[in-house]
Structures are given as C-alpha cells and as structure tokens.
Length: 130
Image 1 (cartoon, rainbow, N blue to C red):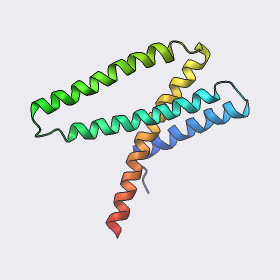
Image 2 (image 1 turned 90 degrees about the vertical axis):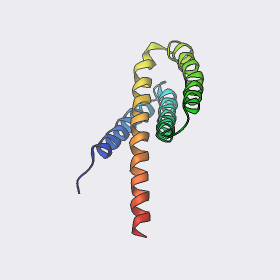
Image 3 (image 1 turned 60 degrees about the horizontal axis):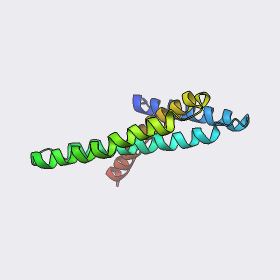
Image 4 (image 1 turned 120 degrees about the horizontal axis):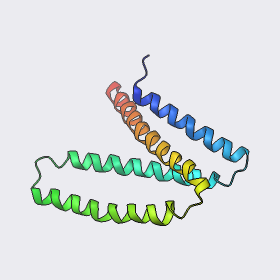
C-alpha cells in the first residue's frame, strides 16, 4: 500500500511532537507545559485554517458584499489577535523556550491539518463501503 505524502507528513509531525514532549517530560524540563500548549494552539490554528478555506470555497456565487463582509470580519479578528499573540505572548517569552514552542506550533498545525484530511478520507471510504 502506497502512503500519500500527507500521511507521511502526518506521521513525521506526530513523531517530532512525541519526541519533543517525551524528552521534555523525561528530563523534567521547564518547557514541557509550553510544548503542550503550543501543540494545542497549532492544532486550533489548523482547524481555523480548514474552516476558513472551506468558507472561501462556499463563497463562489455569493454577492460581493457578502465576500467583503466575510473578509472584513476575518481580518478584523485575525489581525488584532495575531498582533496580540506576537507582542504579548511570543515576545514576552523566555528566549530559551521560543524555538521549541514555535516548532511545536508548526508541528501541531501540520499534524492536525493532515490528520483531519486522513480522518475525512477514512470516514468517506467507510461510508462508501456501507
């Protein structure tokens, strides 16, 4: 059975997350809580990205006013949150935790994005067989 690139990325992301978390917990490093939190934030951002992408796909055929309103709301919430997160969270963190936290954020996004696609694919295959 041939593995798709997305499945390989999903397993690599999970492996990276597991190794980083295991190392932090085994060695009782202070970063362990940050790693868990940033993995969760990355997973949440992946769901947000999937929601926005599906909403954009549904915009075809809609009135231009609805499209402008959608993007105005998206930018109205997204830009201030991004600015707050960068200034109040990332820039105020201990620099020793920053690299690991950002890696975990990206790994969480990659894992959850690919896992969602994997789960949807398995669910569709399961429903098609019934």
